[in-house]
Length: 247
Length: 329
Figure 1 (cartoon, one colour):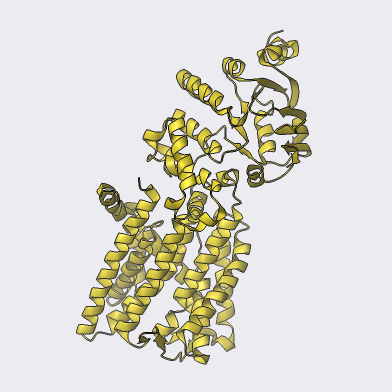
Figure 2 (cartoon, each protein chain N blue to C red):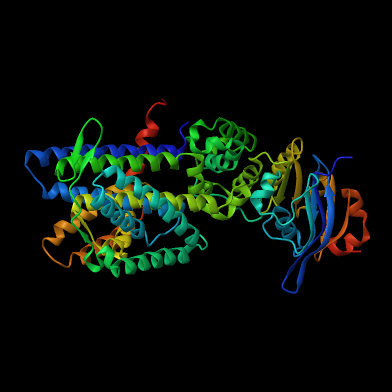
C-alpha cells in the first residue's frame, strides 16, 4: 500500500494556555477533496498553519507522501509538494494579475532561468496563460491585483496557490465573502481541480461542503470530533450537537 | 504581450537614453567652451547617481530603507584612494573595491537582514556611523583630514586611454560606467530573481509559500547594492584627488535617499535624474546662499507632497503609454 499523500499524526499546538489544536490525526487520499469544518475558533486555520509550516507544531507529525516534514518552513513544504491559499486574501496587490501568477509559477522553471529575462521563462508563461483561462481572469491579466473585485481576488488567491503545480492544495475558505453565484462557480472550479491535485479545504457553506467533499473532518475546540463521508458526518449525533447546534 | 514590469523598465531605458544624449551634448559644449567647472560638477552628479542607484535597488525594488549606504560609498572611495596611491591603476582600484565591497556587503547583510522595517533603517544608519567614527579617528586613514594626494591616473581602455584629469574624458568615462551599472541593475530586476525582490517589497509574507526563503534575495540585493555604492565611491578620489570622512557621514546617505525619492523610487532612472537635479541645485543655490540646504529641504518636502512618485515616477508612465501603443516586435 502506498503512503497517503498527506497524513497528520497527533498534531498539537498551544497558544499560551489554550490548546488551539489538540492531537488531531487524519490522512487524506490522493485526488480527493477533503473538507475541514467546525465552528469559529475550532482550530481549522491553525491546523492549516501547522500543515503549511506557517507555525511549528508542539507535538505530532506532518507527512507528505510518507516523508516527515514536521516543523519545516513553508518553502520546504512547497518543495515537498504542498501549496496553500489564505483566508485573508494575501496577494501582491500592486502587481498585475499576470505577474502574481508568474511569480508563483516561476518556481517551475529550472534554477538556471532565474538569471535570464522573464520573457524567456516559457514554462512559467504557459502556466500563467493556462491559469488565467481556467480561472476566468484572462480579461483582467494586466489589471493590478488590487483593482480586482473581491470575488476575483478570491479566485486569484486560489490560482496563485495552484500555480506551482502542487500535489496537495490547501484552500482556506476560498469562497469567503463571495456572492452566491460566485460561490457556485468556485465550487465547480475546485471540483475540476481534483483531477490533478489533492485538495484539503476549509469551508463554512454547509451546502457546498456536502456537495463537494469526498471526505469531511469535523473539528471542535481544537480536537477532531468526527470524520467520514458527508452523509456519515451529517448523521453523527455528536456533530449535530457541536456544529449544527441541535441534537 | 509585453509584461507590465518589463515595459516600465523599457520606459526607464528610454529616459536613460535621453539623459545620455543630454550628457553628450554637455560634454561637447564643455569641450567647445574649454570648461572645467561644469564638467567636473556633472561628473560628481553621476558619481552620486551611482550611490542613489544602490539606494533605489534596496528602497524602490526590495522595499528596504537603507540610511547607511554611505558606508559602502565611503569604503569604495577610501579603498580606491589607498590602492591608487600605491598602484596608480584604475583597474586595480576597481577590482579591489568590487571584491572588498562584496565581502563587506555580505557581512553587513547578515547583520542588517536579521531585522525588518524601521529597525533595518536604524541598523544600517548605525553601522555607517560606526564606520564614520572609526575612519574619523584613525590616523593611518588621515583622520578628520582624510587622504590627500591621490595621483592623476591614466585609465587604460585597451584601444584608448583616458586621464582622470581630463574634464570631458573622465566625465564620459564615468557616464559609461554609471550607465553600465544601471544596465546591469535593470537586467537583474527583469529576471525571475529580480522579480522576487519586487515581490518582497509588495508582500514579503507570501514569498515563503511560493517556495522561496526571503533571506537569500534580501541578502543578494543588499550585497549588490553595496557593490554598486562602493564602485561609484571608487570613482570619487579619481575626480577629486582626495577623500574625506564626510563621505561616510549621514549627510551622504541621507542625500542619496532624498535623491531617490525626488527622482522617483522604483524606477532606477530616477536616481540618475535626481542626482543631476540635486547636484545642480546645490551648486546653483549654493552660489547665492550658504543656507542652500534649507532650499533643498523645502524642495524635497514639495516633491514628497506634490510628486509622491518622484520626477521619473510621474514622467515614466507617459513613456510607458507610448511604448504600449507601438506594435509588438
